[in-house]
Image (tube, rainbow, N blue to C red; front, side):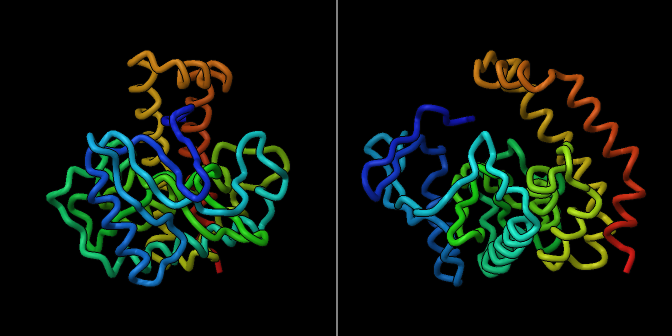
Length: 253
């Protein structure tokens, strides 16, 4: 949504708006590849004024709206968990440069002081995961990358892929446990995850509030089409009300 209409593909090259710190993002993508994570586009550079960036096109299938049914299978959910763990494994080997003005838009509020912080993707939504042969194979759109706890990135991804906002016919308690299992989330993070998801929901809401307050027509229209702030209220209330059940689903052997 943030780059609607501004991304162009020319053959094997994708050109899109560049962040002010695009050079640092590109260095991170190269470092991930150097540490064995091949599920990222290869950065090719920026234009003369730095306003546009070029990256290699990542072939595969992306579940854009209206989301296909295969996007909601448990095999798909597990493969996203595995891909995210691979990303974090490579990120853990890449030193975090705290001098870079990383995005604060959806960043972990505890990222600046978190022990063992990695550079989180922060936006592993359905539209940013590329599938090949039915499995999550790559991630795109690293605009919002920022230092944070790995469990924060897990929480952000779970919001979209479980999904925590609810979807008819899907059991969020069961699916959250499936996602945590596929990722290989440890006991301490499993107990903390429901609370971190609540933090992530508040961060996402604040993100939308800033866009709407700024008059961004794409976000204004999307908010109206998806039930307005009442939908956000219901979502956040549901998370808080079901925190104990979510924790039990994650921690009960």
